[in-house]
Length: 280
Image (tube, rainbow, N blue to C red; front, top):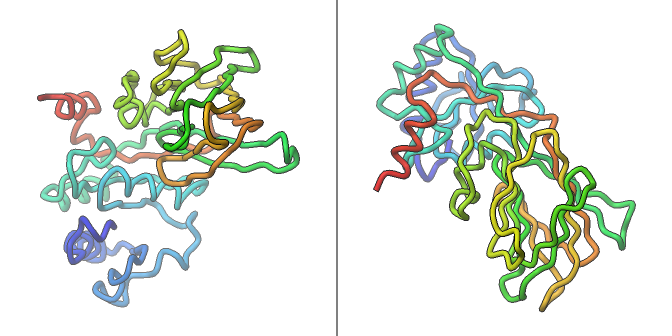
């Protein structure tokens, strides 16, 4: 749960009480006081094999959902979200629907969407034997340092040259992330279960200044060339994990072998949520 959204963990305790009353073994990730306020019947999720979970219930917003996906990476556990913030794209259940939705889930009346994730490998010409690996639900972003000038990035698709960007940066988005930073930067919205990768430049000075929608099987390569000022760029995964890379760095991005298994009880369609988001 997101403790800043679930004040006093009131919704978390409602979920736990409902599950325990139906004889469901329950564990919680402990952000401080969840376990001490929920009784000894609740186990600490950190102490259990992640593969033992049948379902993860997230209380918060889309950011909390993404954190949970990373936490359970590789465990193939379906995740469902209870929205405690503004209208979310991933958290479809509202707090007033909590018990009715959990009843649907326990009755098996839900579906699981397989949403594509991305993975990235970073290599440097200076240290060719060193690799850094990252995974993303929404997107990877390559961005100039705010105090520096434009960065120059050569881009390739399946080793074939696409374009040289002189820009503030680039966004590489999954379909699930198309409604996040990609959309704010003018990129297209895709259905979250599509099999595509989106490349969106940020304030590009190149002729190619629009998004490119690629196949999910395509592999993107980026070579960090030079900077008009400064000597580094920021690389981030889902807006949280950030590393700094210099000139002479290769970044390889492709569809990940891992997927985000999103459980849904069919309360709202993706397009209904989009309409509510973009409505004035």
